[in-house]
Length: 125
Image (tube, rainbow, N blue to C red; front, side, top):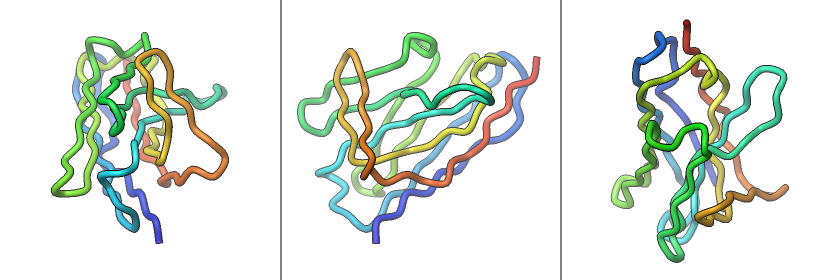
């Protein structure tokens, strides 16, 4: 059974940092590209960051470039999202999903992709 479990969310002040984790199981971790997405209250889900396992392409949403860093640990079957200089606009539920398509200019997910339950990030002003 494929499982993706996010953790690390919480309440932080503007300018603070959080590191999100996504624990993956039930599939060959080396074969699937995993991405981070988020959904803010009243807004559509958006792609945040990913790294392609196929060619190493890296994607970051324009709003997080220079502040967020995606990483993965293939030995631990984990992916991470280090979030620095957080802003109130970063508030939302953060999800990891797989397998997704990751390109340098876009990130795509599909109806049959697997998703975690999400972890809530709240940035206070």
